[in-house]
Length: 164
Image 1 (cartoon, rainbow, N blue to C red):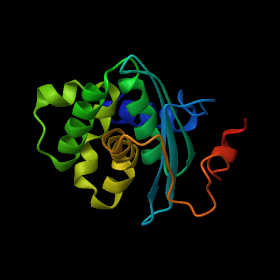
Image 2: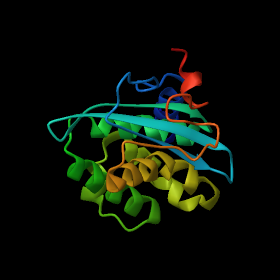
Image 3: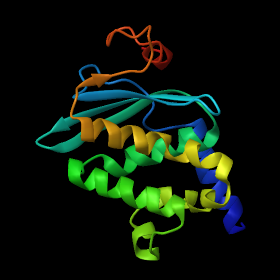
């Protein structure tokens, strides 16, 4: 199997069968992220225990790149401290900008498969949506935030897509 085909299959698998799509009953933090240029929409929830990410899930809709990227991100940050999750986000963004070292890129595990997005400017916002949302959430230190006018923190339209 050709390497590009393997990469495409892994990204497709994260898109079609994400491990972290769902809802946390009582998340420590949650934030909605939107990419208006192509319609990607995610609702990210994180549960912390002793400053470590105990669980991270997302809900919403979007292209294969945005959905795979946020699923891979959740894989990476579970079990990590907030500071490490933010460090990984900076590395991911550097990778997308084409400025990360090979060693840094390797630390991103499967998310490193998205490094060629740097050569596709129209897809960059798709790939970074989940990461930017997580970064904004962790840096704001607010429990809940959503850009939707119809969201009151409990009845977000994106939460309804989780099937729960």
